[in-house]
Image (cartoon, rainbow, N blue to C red; front, side):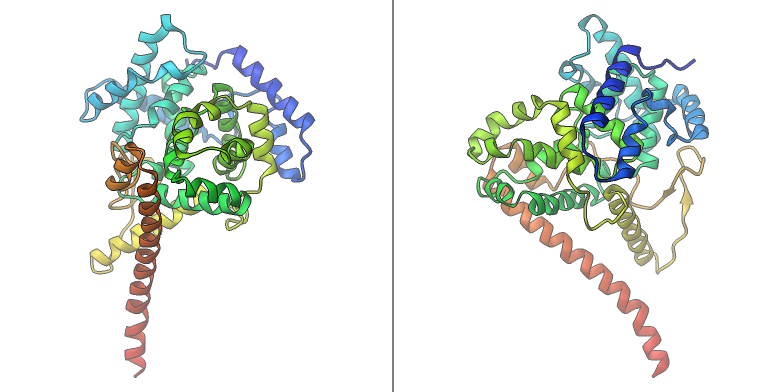
Length: 386
């Protein structure tokens, strides 16, 4: 029988959302209704968005694939040993058991999705700290990857993370233009903090209570919750950040983010607009679909314009389509190696120039692919007419 989240954190979060609904002045009634659904009690595994058949099937699969040694098991074990120290509700006397459980969950994810990426360990650990059983933590994470369009963040061959960061930067410029300009002048480019935020979904960067609140909003379907939380953090810290140099950012930025009050961040995130380019669609869904279509197009071009979709080969359960070149996570999936090295050595000016060149190159490549497909489709028709 699956374990339920412990009552104390559930009760605390229930009171949290009651206070939010009571105190926040909603202008969007639909968003108010979403938050009202959190005030009656919270159990991630009981939320209506979770397909019952999906949950039942993958709970069973978990026990079949979680314990064998796989290619990535060694890398997972190294990450597991340094994961739980960040969580306030993690107890030292439970550490060995927690690490073993986390290893099995990540081991199963790596086998199911044909890969593992750093950052996933903090998300899975948060689920376990909040009282989910191993099978439920695995199933919930898999649901996020398969059904909620987040797998692309970790795919080495996907441009998902790059494009998601670009959408975030556009919203950053829209809402906080002066702060964006200051950070760029100092060499503190978006990837230097955005990569950690979005690959760990704030489970590493913020207090546990805030990380849980962010996941609550994600599971009930608040549009662009991760982008809005990222902007909320920057807006709340704007006055301090405007006075900081690059060296100050390296020393003080992460502690400032981790000390932010969960209520303040959530209130600010709710007050911010979603991505205006998406209408009512979440940016994660949009970027995922665009990556899928490009992969289909690339696959078609490389195979003489013949493409046949196939169902997910991991379980043959019809959870999602697989596309050649999209399966498999990179162990260190972030951005190109030169940018990753510049970030590692805190070279802000180089990060900025590489990021700008990277964005320009992505735009050029996407345009070139679209033009190539257009001419292949149109020119034969014109020849026939002639």
